[in-house]
Length: 70
Image (cartoon, rainbow, N blue to C red; front, top):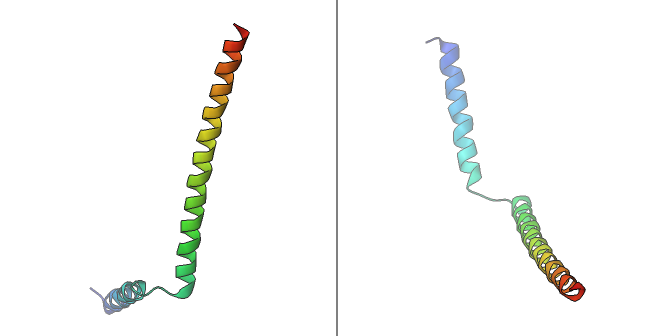
């Protein structure tokens, strides 16, 4: 293996070790981003529940209309 390849591999492992160490600590921007993600997820769940409720209400209305026509 050439010296250049050995140096490149050493540099690569150095960068990888730095990324592993830096991933352990969360900065304020990352914390804010996580909170935003959680808020968006909860909002999506709430919208999905509301959509299901509207769909169920629509089905009940359709059933009552059909019953009224008979």
